[in-house]
Image: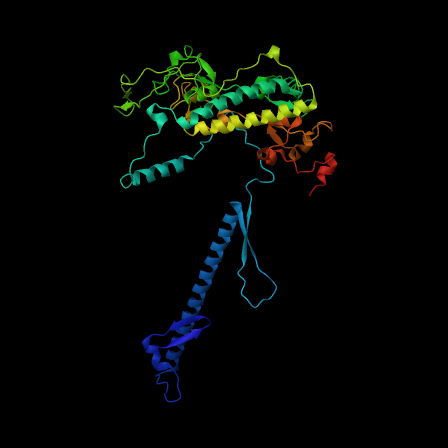
Length: 466
């Protein structure tokens, strides 16, 4: 077969065309000139389509490389190739510089969902179904995983100290905030749940409470209390966390306690005023939802356990003493931030082993493997659900709401202006109180506080910003 080179594409001619190749010792041997032109047209068509296919292949490769670059850029890792421009006799391999963006310079504020919106699932339903199909597919090839101790009625031994730490951190946080509220002014709106930390309330027209049209959206500020800073999230106390679900007619007979305290009790904290059932042997499953307790008669009588750590108690409001000096205030603010960090970090660890549920329509929280059956949901379209809650897996902000407020860059400076709100940052109310009391800003909350953004002195200057 004969071959012709057309650019960078090689075209193989059919066997019939070999007789038409011109050489010094052969003749064309064609019956007519038209047939030769037809075969030359075939050759041109082959060359054209070969060059077109190569162009299409190069174009697809370029598109794939471009989207791979965008994917690396969006994930926070950008590889920059550095080549030496100094000529050398030896071959230098290019270096790879990885730029990581774990803490963004400025981050968006947490989204506030409307009362008519359902909370999103922590893990999308599509991913949950995909993971379930993968588990079902590999179930025959892999051994069955052991059941976690909380599902068998037992405690996780290494998390019992964490339960004491979370409970003590919450009590310490409450006591310190009561002292800081006597030094740092905090204001709460009389008509809506918004609060503001600073010498005076801001003048933003963002009030959505009743009769807001008469006040033109302005807030009516009053002195804030502890419940305005730390939102009280309560849950039903379960004597047996593996027992039957709470019915609607039992909603008033079962005590309600703070949800963080209930989580600590289920994780191993013993409080005399809130007894709970402790099993020393795993339960015996007789059905999908039925079980019986194992016989513990062969075990010795349980000895009253001594608390691993001393349990703190709340200080009454009448015994609260405000810090007397600036150094004492700064030290108290640092301790408050540390208690806030310990409480949230420890609660997140406990939630990974002990399930916590939240209603997708209202802020109701239940600590347990399944939500209760009390029909007390009053959120949007609760009539269609007969007042029942739409339970889903809770996140840390459902158990401990951060309660974001506007960050005041300069307490002694001019008040915040509504026209410049895009230049201001936000932070949890506890963090903002501690920062204004003199504590250092934690690295975790710097992106949302927008500390590196220059704030214009007037609206006219802000309009000139490009």
